[in-house]
Length: 266
Image (cartoon, rainbow, N blue to C red; front, side, top):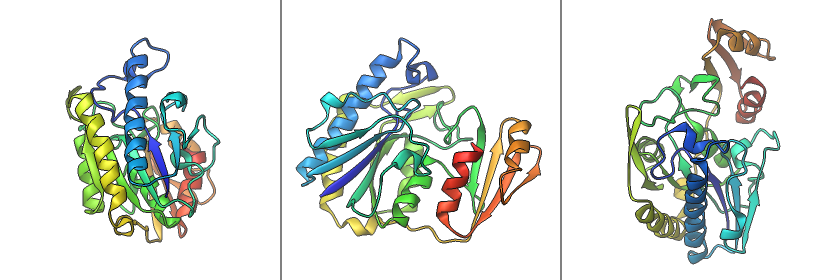
């Protein structure tokens, strides 16, 4: 079995402030270690379910957070950013049996996590697809679905877990925390670690195809920017139009065009 894991940090148990996600800040080291520990637990669960090859995308900020030496030997770690449109699921293709998301978080505009954002906290206020506000999980679970790869597992804050289940009731989720204003109420990281291991094993032992999510077009992408200047700039992207001071709209028939546009618009 060949498994892909996309890992972020803002949905890791206990995190509560941007300092803890910033490699330039002393607080980052503890959460870098916890992110590594939680990804390793997910990998161990995958191995227990029969995975013989695991690819992990370090998908937070610089993409240089996870300590590869603490992952199973069958793991390949993707560090840094290629600038390919697959972004947080770089190298994912039809040869994988399943994809999992570890440490994911609520979407931009949400109050469910003080670190909520979609792709860029500094640039994007909200992202909508066909009128629905979406986040990073939605973007990349659908990207996997286009390639025939089911999204079987997710860990993160309460809201993103609930949204993942609403999108696909067959997915296995592990909630890590709940945001309240600028605070978080986190579950014990060792409890989360154990559930990541057992949850991943369970997710990969079930009927994987039940978790396949294939988006249906045509697509209307709307990006609402914090700064009007970013929207003005984005309105010059081929096929896009600026519809108000802060919002750019793009119509596409192919989901790949949505992902390609994001590389240049964000």
